[in-house]
Image 1: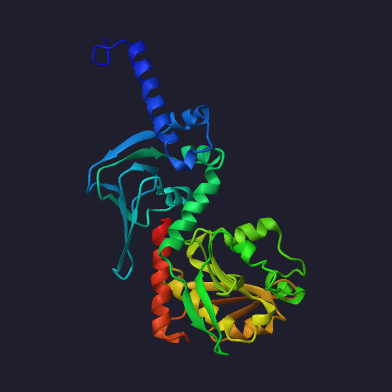
Image 2 (image 1 turned 135 degrees about the vertical axis):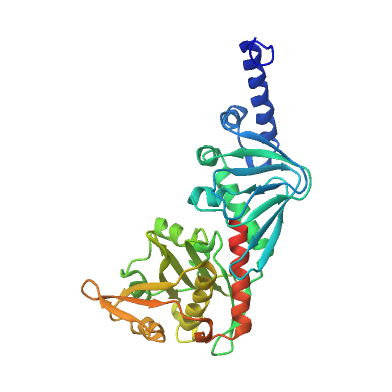
Length: 346
């Protein structure tokens, strides 16, 4: 008989038993606590078990992303080497997922993942991930995992404004769309019009897009009030889909915080992130009458072009570090946090 002397029926029974074992293993993970056995079995059928010894490389920086890993037991280390040869790393315990962001973005791995002790888990591809994310409660927990992964090691940067008041600068986190709607923060119709070219508040779908980001093709910094954690300003870049070295930049500042140097601070902040992430040229589309933003961009060697009536587009190279107005110490902190974020989600 084929298959080592076993008949096809025995082989089929063995495969069913293996699927049941994988289903039981998934059921033990907090990620799937709201899922039924039948729901998990459909996912387990499409996943492969993983066993790794301490020191085994599971994911290698720069390689093609073809899978993600769920860690059932053991621990792994995430290590990323930056363009300047700097190295950042973190540990990932059991119960977490690694590798899914690069897989879904269809981009090379941004970090190397190595087992630091004997490890077991499961491997799946993008189709398995899509099916898994549709299970009850899973997408919400995945979002919470990312938030915890970021919040666990990123300390907000205290920045002092021109009036000597302080705010906290940090990358955007899930939930910041609600924090930007805090009752103490007002974005007037005029402010919304200058930012979104519409007097209406942005829709829920747009707010989701603006605040749930991947930190590589879409990077966002926010300024928050330490007292109530309300978000009072943000700046972002979004890469061009056809040229990863080009990105569109935009920012918005709440009414009570305007005229305090926040716009210039935010531009320097997003410039530092762009330098780390390989963005070399910025574009910005804004109302021709938006003089405050035009004045901030005019610090740089901007090429202004007319767009549709009443709208202009700015294009300029991402400035060198010595063109920043923030001090070198703050710039170094921003670089460090940018690298930490990429490590966490890569």
